Length: 70
Image 1 (tube, one colour):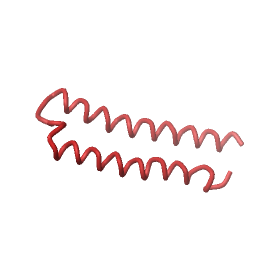
Image 2 (cartoon, helix red, strand yellow; image 1 turned 30 degrees about the horizontal axis):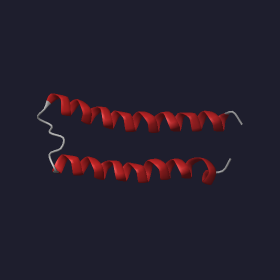
Image 3 (cartoon, helix red, strand yellow; image 1 turned 180 degrees about the horizontal axis):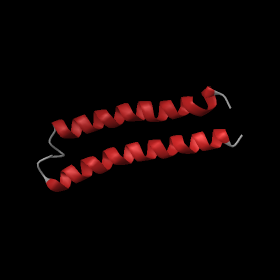
Image 4 (tube, helix red, strand yellow; image 1 turned 90 degrees about the vertical axis):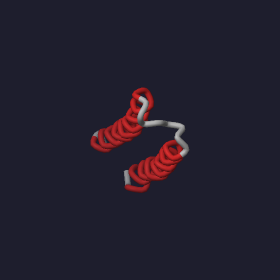
């Protein structure tokens, strides 16, 4: 498979999605909807960041495994 059918959709999904995610995080931090001085809120912030990184890494791993099996 070529780049346009494997990695380009991945880059679009997590690139554009990452920009929207970061803008959303900036928005909730600036509006004080998420207050970092609360232990529970800090836990949610790290959970959201970890989740984004985890799912993008898992997706990339499966793409690599699929490309190797060809």
